[in-house]
Image 1: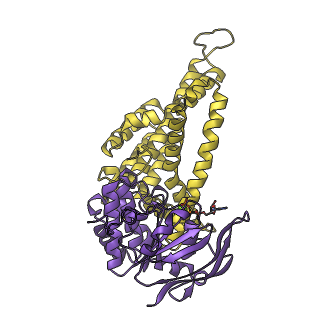
Image 2 (image 1 turned 180 degrees about the vertical axis):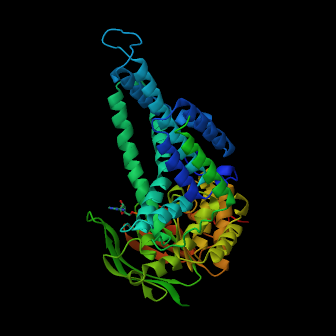
Image 3 (image 1 turned 120 degrees about the vertical axis):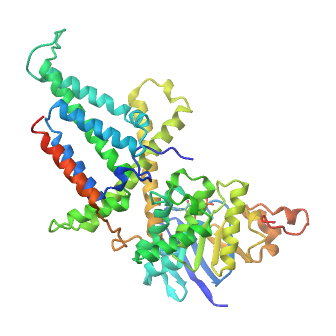
Length: 251
Length: 250
Ligand SMILES: Nc1ncnc2c1ncn2[C@@H]1O[C@H](COP(=O)(O)OP(=O)(O)OP(=O)(O)O)[C@@H](O)[C@H]1O
Ligand SMILES: [Mg+2]
């Protein structure tokens, strides 16, 4: 039994699963864009809705938070640098640090938006098969001239297929090294090198084996694709999402 | 009997100059069950990869069902289905059903035909109940059976197994073996590599021993028993104790 990362497809019949992947892709992009420089009220409303939808789709939010814990360092860093570099009313001042109220607000807004984008893509990934994602990317790219839509969508969907494998490999390498007491070494640089090199080597090897296995099953660009179908539900969802996006300018 | 696989004077050198295969000549008859044995690094996997054009000969020729491999790779890969040593690296679908559908989709079949083949293949390896699960949540034996189903859905004539029993416990080994044997009964040609002869000895008609990239022996298993150990393969118990061969399935 392998542990799955939360960022992989789960079979289900939730609301997110029922929506057409083309619509979900569009919603994800629209909402991410609408979240730029918007009010806290809008952010809270959308975040709460997304969280409810994710729970409905069977996502374990606690596990997701655990997987994203390294990411929180990055967010803290962004928050700190924003609050220190923006002009405005000083909150307090200590040594050379003088965070401002406006800076803090900017930082929170920015980090919140990043988190929202992550949650949106999580909802997209857990509820869409790679084949469906590929077919929807192809659907949109076919409208753009001079882009070989089959090649691009194949590449993107392969990348998506490969992400969970990369996570698993990193975790396996970490575990194997913990078993040999790497935690006794305090130098983070040493540990990073010892983690990165073997993991990269294994990921390349995995990629090669996967490619060989796909080749032996006749993988090519002209395969039978999925036929995507939209229903009334998708158009209702379109209305709802459209309204939410427009509300952005009013609340 | 007609030969489904014919190999003439096959040599293979890797890009770094290592000699992987050295003048191999083989004829494998349609419907037979052939086991390829040999120690680690003897060239078993390298040989198998020539059967469906994953590797192409440096010199010599591989002919499948009358067609030289390099002439029509797509057709050859449909005729020769390959189950690899490591299950994890050959599962590409998000669900059991999707993984089995991957091959038929590549062949450009109609949706309906794909659905029919997937159901049939899952039925054969008894995984119909798990059709909506994520493949990585299956047990080792179930994963191996899934990889077999994925290949079966392409309706190949020849099935090639690279170490099909590695990492499997006793019940799973029996199950996988049972499936392999019944596939031969249905008319498939089976080629299988292993270094645990014990498990398959009662079911195969021919044993080919590889050694340093060459075919060292090629005969019925029983006639090779007392030479096995010199090629790094353990002599089966039945031979050591002078008792009759017994199938793992009985
Ligand atoms: N890409 C490669 N480049 C160079 N040498 C290789 C390559 N692949 C395999 N070899 C070498 O070719 C020889 C045969 O390897 P092969 O994988 O066929 O052995 P095998 O009989 O399948 O072994 P095992 O029982 O371990 O699976 C080995 O000595 C191996 O080191
Ligand atoms: Mg091998």
